[in-house]
Length: 327
Image (tube, one colour):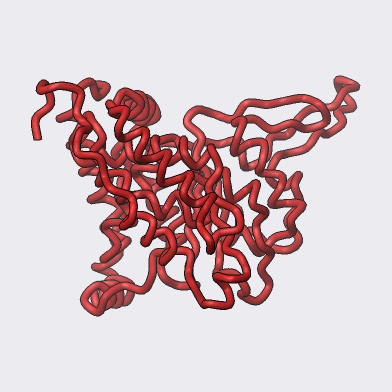
């Protein structure tokens, strides 16, 4: 299997990935595409929704479609940091301590129901999500490349949940809610889960070298200065909005840029258009924004505030490098 070297080959490979995941995740094509874009942008993904809508199914499907080492941990109140990061064990033979790696030292780490464990265990992921390394007993250990965290969580206020700290939420590139499927998709889900013939297995279509190559190609996607200004304006407005207590961080600006590049790449373009930014803006901003008391009293939702910001900020009309790019 040859490495991908051109945009046409990359686009075909991405279509294969989407087709495999869509075998088991029905009626959520936009969510599937955005998760793929986040992986191509080297970002971590947070899936927040009510139980039973396919969050874990989506995460597991992506772990299978890539020929990568993946580990899954079901987060419960008794999970400890050492259960994730590993620990040092004394060896009588050598007379020294030997590091025993934890499940987080993998390519794709599935953190299932991450807000059901204690804040102490949640915080254990802060370093590895940002620095791609774990520190145990004063020694640092690099995680494999690529490294992606796909976490699921139940809605805030659900029984037995612990809120994720803002510092950890900020480390997720995107946060999405899948929502319930439409009627037709739900019928297909019922058929597939109730008959043996409907049990489709996800096939691996990408290996590590190919994924790294695609990620490198995403980094080369062109972004016009007007697009950079548009992204920055969308982010900075959140820090001045009358309904927002804490706006999007500079890390959010970086995430928006990377996601817009990946979105353009998945659409077969090597340059970003304003609509790419608009498509991912809410997903990169909503978990980074904290509404104030005025918003809560008025029953204003985060998505409504961000949607209004998108409507009020004019999109740039110039965004191509030169005439060398076609429409």
